[in-house]
Image (tube, rainbow, N blue to C red; front, side, top):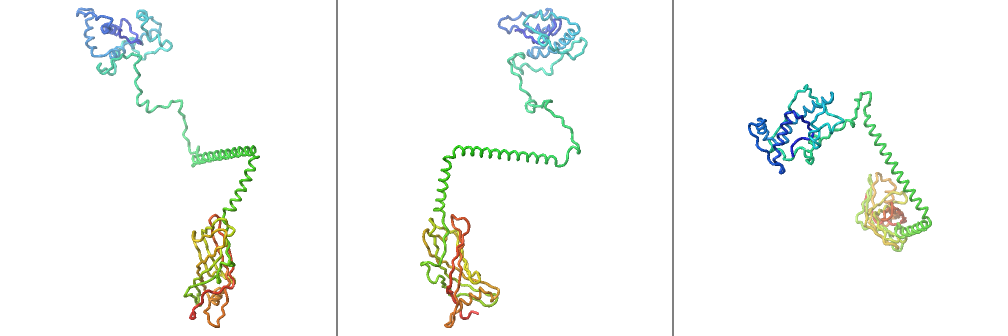
Length: 408
């Protein structure tokens, strides 16, 4: 079909219209339905046509449209100004037929006004760049199915913010703000968030409590017997499964006589200030675990021996976890090795004087006073909370050692 842009209004007396018509007639031979035009003789009415055709042969249809479009736009502006002044009706629309339309047919409401004030003078606008036809696609420029070119990187990568979304903020002076105001506002916002979170948690807890309370009120008839049964079962389990703290005693047939013995060959005693004594001994205790239904495992077991007269400590010993274990429902005797010792600043100390006289060297005429001792066992038992203490008295026991005859 003939090549002609649909939006360009051309006057029949213009050179662009003449060139466009001749070029369209020349290109009609490409259509299979029309035969090629006869060659023109050099003496034809348009001798410059061959020169124009040769000069435009290296350009595509899009390039020709770009070359001629400027003149058409200038003439369009002139025609629009004439229509605004009084209006001259062009007969081009009637002669072209129904297949062609002009710019005024589509944009009757808002006509474009040309800014070129040339007083009727025609101007030809050359395109910015015209390249060889091989650099362009053979598709027509006015094909409606041709895809639009993609947006440039500047518009797709860095979108601009609409002016309606921008906010004008005045510059604050020192009188409009105080140092630390931003931090105080941040702290206030954080405190408000914490308060809201705390209120939300409290509300959730109260809601859960109300839900549980309603459930209990609806099911109390079988919940009460269940709670009573579980309570009784827990008491029985604690009674049988929690171990009892054993007691210690010296009044048992399993306790030998004497309960305090020693095989230390060289006990030490000194009468010069500062004074002191030291010797090793064995103390036999009876541990009664008759009240316990489970074996008693000691995590710690410590023995402290004091004089009843002065309450002064004369012996201590400690054992760690796993060293002592007592079977349930029985009385078990244990012999514990302990160390008697004492250091005093003066020989007039009453505890030292009692130990020195009770353990003096035995002569035929020597009469030694017996020892009255208090034995305390401090223990920690697996399954029992805290430290438990048990105390037993050992009265009128003979000192298991004697000082040497040369002891000063």
